[in-house]
Amino acid sequence: MPVPPTMIQLPSPNHDARPPGQAVDILVLHYTAMADAAGALAILRNPDAKVSAHYLIDEDGTIYQMVPEARRAWHAGVSHWAGASDINARSIGIELANPGPGPNARPFAEPLMQALEKLAHDILGRHPIPPARVLGHSDVAPARKQDPGETFDWRRLAAAGIGLWPTDVRPLAAQTLGPGDVGEAVSALQVELARFGFGAVNTGHYDAATAEIITAFQRHWRPARVSGIADAQTQDLLAALIAASG
Image (cartoon, helix red, strand yellow):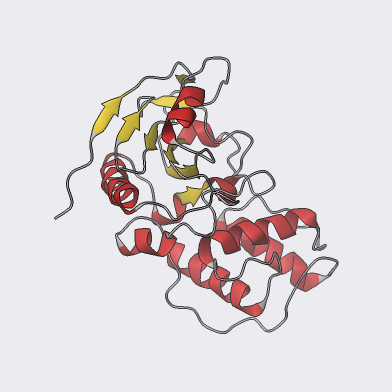
């Protein structure tokens, strides 16, 4: 039986008040992109850095709380989801100790994942966060961020009741769309991406912004092949997720 995670209070000065009456309805996951948790904690608690998160989970499963959930931590930066642009105001941010891609890449540690499941369940019990609003930093900031990346096990979280994973996927799309394509099919794709929550703009042009959003979508929901190209499988997964999210 898993050992309950340890919670350590390690306050950061980098936070402010949420807007009056603003509910928390988004959970955002990050990776630290640093060699160890100590280095990340130093930055997240440095007043000059002006960045923070509510929690950081170390690879051994230790949870550090830096910002009270009632306060706005500064973790998402310039971001967008479902028409909202101040994601910090309505979200809780969790940093996961992992170096990310590159020469030091390694899987997310099992004690970390167990602690994340416990912490996320606790957070969902306190706040009305729908499954479709358990997101990665790359989902809300696809032009800037990649975390927590395609090696993060979103399927496992969804199986534990945290977040959304496509199950009833039906073959609906036939046309592959990619950079340079224009027309009604591209416009319809952009509309559906925005309907799901991404900050897609209906231009009818498969531009760089659309490719970045598709890349972010694939990192989360089709990690086996992250291409930035909206092939039939990607479009079918998007349709299934929209249907599942109601």
